[in-house]
Length: 369
Image (spheres, helix red, strand yellow):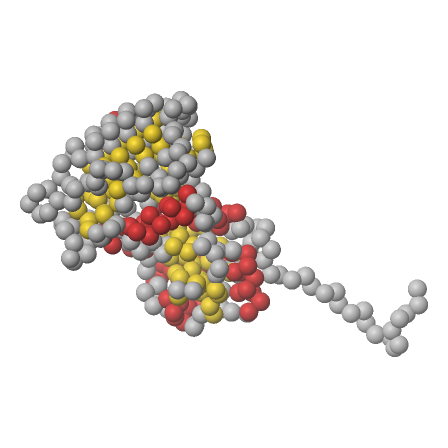
């Protein structure tokens, strides 16, 4: 074959393929710092009727709180895995120190990771990690921070080697790694989970399909999800959309109305009515008690319309589910997939109307509880 070059010249080097991430086995690791902020902490406003402050040792961090059967932490890990991120470290914010963070980055750099996702998990964020890393790579940035229309989020992409030896302070996130970060605007769903109202909005958006989060379990009827091990009495009614978690029991004549979420291992007793509310794991709702527009966690109730949080000392009203419920917990072999009878679920295709003469759980004043 004749030489096409006018003068003898060396063969041009082959074009190197782009090293931008493509989604399969990304050369990226992740460090998830779980915020210790609790949903109950946000409910204790100075002007409310809240009782003594929540003990931080017993309060469940928002990132670990089950929402529609799965925690925000586990959902974030699943999204990272689906994007090809395989190496993930999870630490509690209370134990993170400067030396620890630098050590973690040094360890990731020694393993050959060129990029590290640093996530301070206290919000639910749906990010396209492949597009994020591509943006970071093509911009040649050392630090990239995710933001949305409402401002920056606690999600960063770091190049571990350049930031080693610099200050990494999550309380001043604008200067993580010592550099002003490049901002990446995400168009995905974001819920900052700042209070109980945010949690309810996330549950409702999921039930309506407004975000990628989906309830765990089986959709036994359109808009009604029931997880493994749940037991529902024949005379109980469930109006879509609604969710019943693992190991939860709904007893005779109970009513679970629209946009209600009953998390795992709860007990809704005879004749109780739940409407537009979230019942957090291991919670008991007493006989004939009506709960509307609220979030209930054990004996603590956060009423969303009045912005009041109270602790109820009478275990017959609300409280922790009986300890005997352990046989129905997640992963237990005794848990069975619910086999609902035809009358277990009632779907009424009518316009929503509040339950008549069904007031929400009475809000007690101090001295009455």
